[in-house]
Image (cartoon, rainbow, N blue to C red):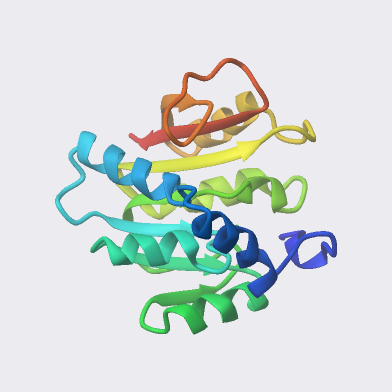
Amino acid sequence: MSTWNERRDVPRGADYDAAWTKMAAAGEPIHGEVDLVLELAAEHDLGESPTMFDAGCGTGRVAIELAARGIDVVGVDLDEAMLAEARAKDPGLRWTHGDLADVDLGTTFDVVILAGNVIVFVAPGAEEAVLANLGRHLRPGGLLVSGFRTGDARLAFADFDRHLSAAGLELVDRWATWDRQPFDGGDYAVSAHRRR
């Protein structure tokens, strides 16, 4: 269901990682997603060692940092080139090739993280199925934390919230950035939804 594999205008594998490596070398913070999900997990009493599902994990930047901080995490992606890079960087983590619309990991998690504009790379019309499937992977009280841009106007935040509500999740909060700058109605948002 994903259109990611069909896109030729996006970097993959080591090329995708190059921008993050450059930012890190310049001293820029590159783990805002990890900082936020760990803060939210603590604030929502999801336990001392919450389990996490990195949906659309790409080359593993987020999952590897979560694991480095002691989190039990699983990464899933449809792009084999991206997963190959993730496996090369950390072969000890669980990396699963699969479509977010129907992958079944056989368990539920405390947190599903959907970073890096993942939801706007799925096939048009597949968003509801993807979000429903991710919701099925959350335990009651668990959080889905996402960040994406609506610049192409394909998926409005209201539709995103509606799809998640249908999947049994409710909006907890929304920010403009991963470091919780107030959301001002712009075209990028980081959202936290909680499974009822």
